[in-house]
Length: 315
Image (tube, rainbow, N blue to C red; front, top):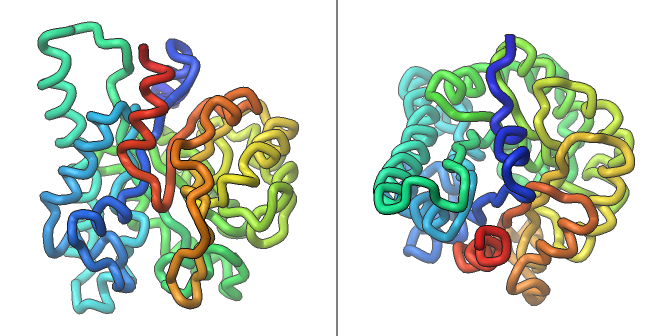
């Protein structure tokens, strides 16, 4: 018996669900050095209160959902720091508790004067980043890891269980570069039948995900799965988003989720960004018109971008 689909619940009452923006970008803006294989997960060890504050900033900006700091948090990654599995699992769970506390504190403080605010109670989506994020070599933008399904399943299963146990409202399978990894994740999800997840891919172009699989094929393959609550893209350049939405839309009736980068291009070899921001405010109206119903930002976006979306959709 499935629990209530949290995204469907919001989209039944509101035309658009608003996601948060970049976590790592904001942590860097607060002075964190994320040049580390653990990336934003390193802040869990050094300054977890700052993660709470960034989540709070996005809720205040108008986000209907915060994505946890677990993208690059894994048992294998923490093991390289000498952290035992039990402690690693507690750190992974902590990413959920930080986001939940920020959500609950925000909701209590800002709904007391107005018990019926013009927005839904925000969700907490537990980030399940790809195997390539653990490799920290840019593989999440290629997807051809050269490992078996069993290796991927062993990598993901325990942390997914921990995130679910910690009480996330749903999982965010995000920046998934390959059909292989998406298939493995969805298979593991079936082991937790009361849990929902969205599935967002990294893209090679506006017609293909990173490993070359057609977007339309991804929509068709996963669009009938009852536990997948939305399908789309993240961490993609803004200029290709509109056409990509149309390709997803042609192949699935699931809500389309998009949270692209600011417009700059990331070089995974040098781990640097190049070019100019082409969307200082995310093109939410155009993307909504194309068929997206869940919109936010990924790398290099900020609470200001989310606030601009909220101003238009939460009057």
